[in-house]
Image: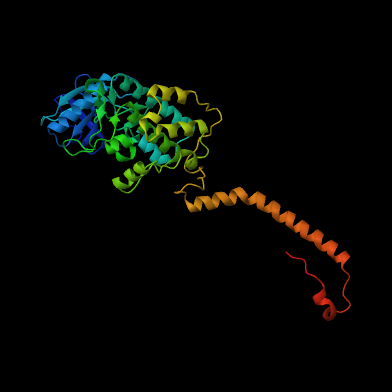
Length: 353
């Protein structure tokens, strides 16, 4: 596809907005109404892809909420592939913001999370579990919006979704490993609304610390962290974050679904109750990592330690110099000069340092 091409005989492509694993998203204009929309196109389409696209369209269309991207239509391209017609949003994804800033201030992170939980609350009320919540699927506008319900599960129709396998029948992974809850990754529990709450915890952890709680060079390394529960607490990674928020994130990242908050609505209420009046916006440039963190940069620690201890070190040096001078004065008055250096040198004790 290229700019100027027609899709379904009525949408003219303007510019490509992005590319993912399945295809591309384009800005387009309706040739009759002149409304501008975003079109989601796929590179290759088979029956599995068609079902996924239709599932995404049904899920997004069912959740009419300010914090979920609006789905307007599903059309077919000239080669018969399904095309999703969505709102054209102006802004950037949360993923792009994290990559640019490294770390997001507490007030911004809480505001974004409140919007995301409101969207999840609306989806869960309809029995829809997103299953792939991550920064790339959160678009930042005045109202943060959840994108991509392509792997959503309609639990209202089929009951709690049993996480029997990480892969679909076509071999595509259901979800993104770094954001998967243990029951989703290992298939040893039921995927329900609390699975999305785990992903929300990962999202908040990454916003506030700049790193993911479970990460690695391979999927196996990520799952090893999940299996052992070796997640560094957020308070260690980001000691300046209010305790009430770090405790909430720890609960969201409970290995057992029963240990997580009861619902997205409950999380939203807790986030809204946090006092942000004393919080300070932070970024990767101003953040001093906790020395206890296993992944702390040594240069940053050295610089932070030097800056933090300099006034204390100077005070000690001045006090030590004054003490040494006083001791020397007292000593010179109390000990008379020896008549002969050779005769008394060994008898005069030398003050220790």
